[in-house]
Amino acid sequence: MDNIHILLIGHPKGYYQLIDFLLSKDFWVTRTVKSYLNEEYGSGKYHEIIVDILNNYDEAISRIKEIDKERKIDAVLSVHEFYQYARCKIAKDLGLRTVAPKKILDVTNKFYMKKMFTSEDILTARYLPIDMKCSQNQIVEMVEKSLEYPVIVKSCNGMGSLGVTRANNKKELQRAVILNRQIARTVISSSTTKESQSHLIVEEYIAGKEFTVDGFIINSKWIPMIVCYKYPDMDGPTFQEPMYLFDPLEKTSPLPKDLLDAAQKAVTATEIDNSPFHIEIRRNEKNGQCYIIEMAPRMSGMGSTFYNLMLYSTGISIYEIFVKQNLGQNIKIDNISYQYATLELDAYAKKGGIIKEYKNLNLILEHPNLVFYEKFKNVGDYIQGPGVNPETAIVFYFKCKSSKDLKELADWLWNNFEIIT
Image (tube, rainbow, N blue to C red; front, top):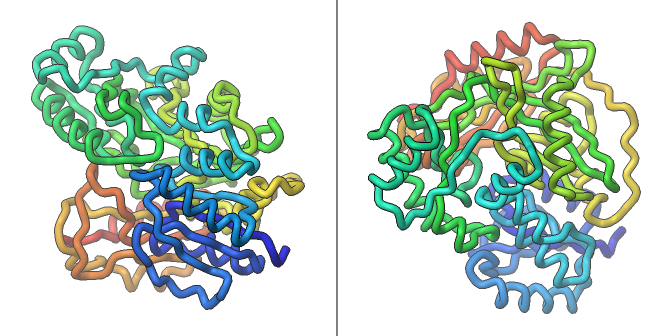
C-alpha cells in the first residue's frame, strides 16, 4: 500500500477531504493544477504539477507519462464534472482500468446525452438542439413551433446549473439564448465538442419536485445509496439548488422505488460499469412520472455532497469505495444501515457582488445538528449571482434523528441564513 500512486486531476481548490483521505492511506498523490495552489497537507507524498489538460491535452499527457515513468501511477481520479472524459482518456493512455471514454462523453456532453436518452427510450423532457448559427427570430420560431412555454434553455457543456434558465415567453427565451450562447463559447470542459459549442438545448419545462440519486456501478451491479430532494422546489428562473435533503427515515424503504426504477433504467442504458453515478430526476406533478434530467459518471458536489451526506447518515466512506473501484480492488458493501437524515446547505447569493455578510453565521455554527462545514469565500470576496455562479461560497452539513427535525431545520435555514452582497 505504501507505493500506491494516485493522479488527481482537475481537483478544485479548497476541497480537502478526498486528499486528506488519500494521504491517510499513505498513498502518493500527484495533483494536476494550472498554477501552484500551495495547499498545505503536511505530507511529503503530496505534489502538484502544472499542466493544462483542457486546452492542451497532448502536452499534458506527455508530462503525465514522465511522472508515470518516475513513479508508476496506479489510478487516475477526478471529482470534477469537466474532467471526467479527460480522466478516462488519461487512464486509457496509461494502460489503467477505466470506463470507455466514448461512453463517458455520451453522459457528460448534454448534446449526446439527450440523443442517447431518446434513442434508448428513457423518459426525458422533449427537446430541440438549437444551432447557434440561427438568428434569434429563427430560434424563437423553431421553439414556438415545437414546444410550449415555459421552456428550459441550457448549454451543452455547462457545469451543473450554470446558465440553465426557465423562459416563460419570447422575451425571456431570447435573453436565455444570449446567456447560454456565451457559456457555450467560453466554458470549456474535457467533453467539449464542436457540437456542444455550436448548439444549445431547449426543452420543455417539467413542473414538479426535483431529486437526485447517487451510488455506484460495481462489476455491472448498480448500487443506489442516497436519494435527495432539492429544497425548496426548483421552479426557476435559475436552478442553483441551495439544499439537498436526504431522508431515509421517512418511509419503510429509505430509497423511493419510482425514482430508483427511473434511475436504474438510465444507468443501464449508458452501459457504463465500475463508476459512481449521479442522476437528476423530476417527478411530474401532474402524472407522477419520473423524468431523467441528467446523468453523470461522478460523485455529486465535487464528491463532497455524496461523501458527507452518506458518511453522517451511515458512517460509510464512499471515498473508500471510489478509490478501491479505481484500483480494481475487491469491494464489499453489506446491507446499509441508515441512522440519520442528513442535509447539505450550499448557500448562494441572491445577486452578484461583494460579500458583505454571512447573515446569522454564528447561529449556524452553534447549531447542535451541524457536523461539518467548509468556507471557500470570505467577507470582501466577490461572488456571482444565481445562474452564472459556478463556485461554492460556504457549505454546511447537518444530521437529524427524525424526518420532522430535518424538515424543520430546512425551513429554519431557508428563512434565517443568507449571503448578503
